[in-house]
Image (tube, rainbow, N blue to C red; front, side, top):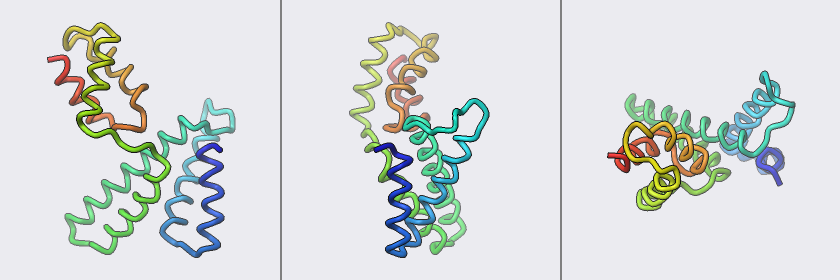
Amino acid sequence: MSIVSQITEDIKTAMKAKDRDTLDALRAAKSEFLLAATSKGAEGEVDDETAMKVLQKLLKQRMESADLYANQNREDLRADELRQADVLSRYLPKPMDDSELEQAIAAIVSETGASGMADMGRVMGAASKKLAGKADGKRISSFVKAALN
């Protein structure tokens, strides 16, 4: 079952259970899927790769909002954002820890034959594709820089 259809089914389940937090998070995801499906170049369907990118974007937004609310001492709003982030993270693969990421980057560096910072773009392209959904771009970039130096 695709991510989009799974989320559609889970929306129905959340509606029946009257689970407001889950419903809000999943409706936001469904809305973004519809926007992605109707965007220029899309064929009316959202594949799992696009769905993962959308979910990562939404998760990142929720985490940034939670940080802002924490800085403003708005724990009620922060808690809402964290609950929604938790719901969204259920549909993403488990994030890699530092040692796994370091090993994956080392393997990509050896596969691409990179030897220095001049090859950063090539390594980043391969790493971003291979590690999509498992690590965010900033973490990947910092590990690539460390591996190439």
